[in-house]
Length: 445
Image 1: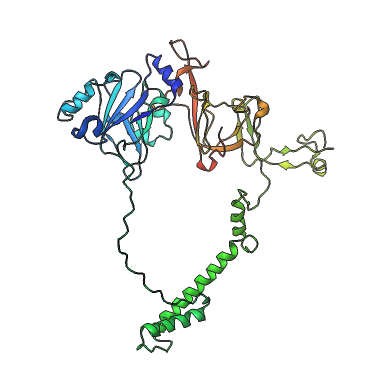
Image 2: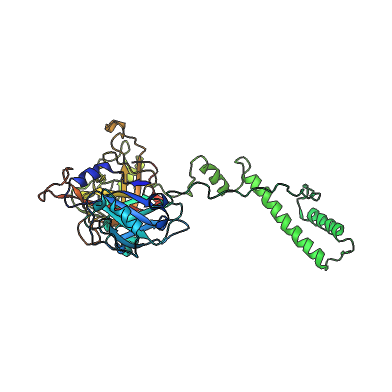
């Protein structure tokens, strides 16, 4: 089974770059390849585009994922052209590795365990411990490897059939069902429940004869009758709230509205996102800044000290106040996404991470970016853009540097979008951002 990295544009750029490497695909070795002479599903062959370095260690491999089997690590790592000698390997494995046609480009990874049936991700990193804690994947990519081709998703179960979760066979002669006791479905209150329980006890225990309220059997029957009365009320209440015509609770009506994708708000002052264009760095003090809507007949000037605000309100102008202070930067007026050379790149619905074109050191966690569709995705025409495709996200993580403290760049393409083939070309600087899952994209971009 071959697990490919799918960005063909970057593969072609890596093949033309003498200093950058990347993962082409990954193979999981099972019995079909070496037979019973190798541990099942614990040998990974990472096929790279260029020759692999011979100084990698287990700390350069990070394997994440899994549901029932997690925490899988690399026991040893070696290039296929120079595998470890027995007893770490055996003669059958050495023969298989030696027969690989591209063994100079193959990295062998022996894992601590075979994973479960869920997907896993293998990453080539500088330090596995630091990479596991870093929220950004591209910042921890192994030095000398393309940040977009330093990981691959795979499954350990390459030769496992779908017959691992079968329902048990029913018995040939099942026992006959027991005769159920008679149940009065009209019993709905405490008194009727108590009467039914006492009658049933007298049938099951004819010699009991309990009649006093202090009797333990009568007390238990009354407790059960009380619980039954409470549950009966809950059933009636649920049935009442299940229909919009009979619901009496506000929360029930809100849930009915959500069934048709309408969210009933608790109510607050009118709020709106605003995108401001500035020509120089500006500090916006929310205590003195005001925004006014337009209305016919409003005063021509609403400057501070003009005394026209009351006349503007009379004309129908609505006043908005910022909710917090903000530092505005002209370079944040319009920011473009970066697609790492993929011409058909798309941020899927539900995405919480993206790459921005350029270095933006003034972007901080807590800042809000507004994503807007400005071109039609099929035609590239601004008139075909969907105006409903706008959303605001609050940043939770921002980085402009990799794990070595160097400026985060795309090492394969220069600032003009051409592949880097000489040292005179400058790599494209980028910025990685993360936002909250509560602000996950409601539509693809």
